[in-house]
Length: 216
Image 1 (cartoon, rainbow, N blue to C red):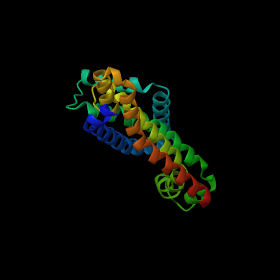
Image 2: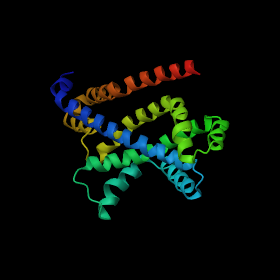
Image 3: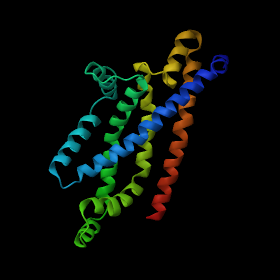
Image 4: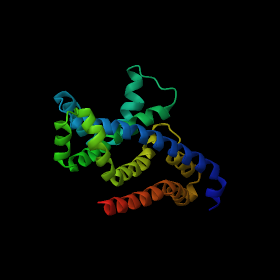
């Protein structure tokens, strides 16, 4: 335990960096994913096509490739980042948005078609029907799976440690290299700080899921 106690400031710094990456990427992914879901049910064929291609490519591509493109390919074509955290946020948010889009789309499909038809019959346009009638109901039903996606996002943020971002896993790797006789202890300490984020989110997901089931 000495190695954990002695390096607690590094663990804490990595924890806060992971929390920051996850929070910012999660917010961006929620917004982008909702827009992609709206595009997938849009009457405009071009929007449906773009959203479908985006979601299918990102969902079936390893996260490492998204990081590679964001951290290495983009700078080579002129998109420079002063901090690697920006590249990590781009990779995490664009990748996670594809999964959020599918979750939201499933929620949209669960709303009875008659409600949308009734709204259109009184003259509401597609945007009004989606934002005022469909999405409020859909988002309530998909909150638990969305939280599970965000839990996966927290764990996926560890990939940033391989791309020069010193988050929790990055610091854990440094400490493991510097303390070869206490690798297991170092990794257990790293896992503990990840659990500080993921366990409360899991409890929140279960609580919301029970409340949604009761409301139904």
